[in-house]
Length: 169
Image 1: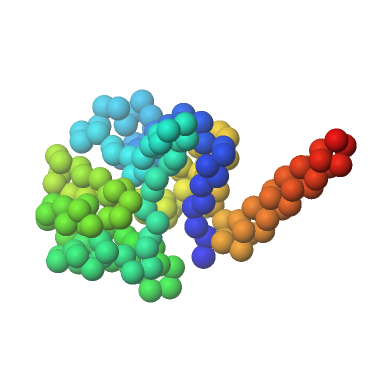
Image 2: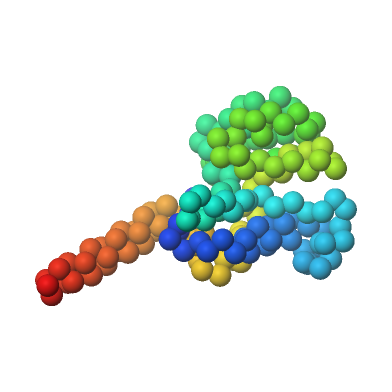
């Protein structure tokens, strides 16, 4: 199954992913029209800055998702095959238990409707909106094996490059 991976070395903190996420989850699916919507569309990922690094945080769709376990109405559920955790706003009572137990702090609240909001990986799209919008490709949507292979190639190139510099000294 495909996952959203983050390349920490590439994120510049532009927040394009957050904006694209909010627009994708708006009724109009258009930036200017979304601004006039009530309630205002909410993002489902958060770009945080820690020291000098920026980090997009989003739902990791945990294997043993605490938000699903704690949801007493069944508004949070997890697909047995894909592991994607989904949220049913019709069943949500806004108790915020899911928000309290999320280890990443990425379940937001839409106070006007009194419901939780979280990443759903944009099920109507080939690639999640946040990934498509990222200008530096800090967010990648791919299989874990493909991501690991890509990272190994990058690491190998860096080792070889460092080795070549050391040989020149």
